[in-house]
Length: 169
Image (cartoon, rainbow, N blue to C red; front, side):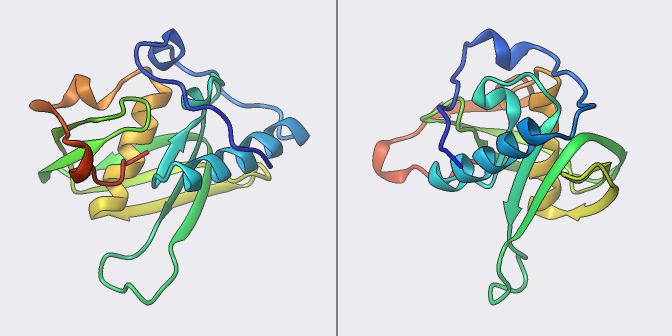
């Protein structure tokens, strides 16, 4: 495993629609492991492959339960993720991004989402995400479609160095 360099805006790879994954071989496994290590070291709670310069439909998310801080965070590696259902109820939340360091913005997103995709072995999976976890998945899947949080934000501002919160990814 290795920590990879995080690509920052305005790199063209961040604006490209990522390619669907069909090969679940060793290269994909290395990419996933490297993305997990990179996300944790950053630190962030999510990372999309384009953020490490790889235009493939791969995301990793690691986030704990809002209601139970005694449980360890759950780690997801999702290949070819798709949002199959979004809640009609939305909520404004402040997001940041490892690819846009030093900036955050208020983004209105659905409060729950159902995501389908494949795990790292190519087996189908379905995730029902609520609250902040749903927001993270939506943010990361946006990356795979060349969309950044600044495209959806109602307001974006620069953070003061000493008040910088953890980025979504």
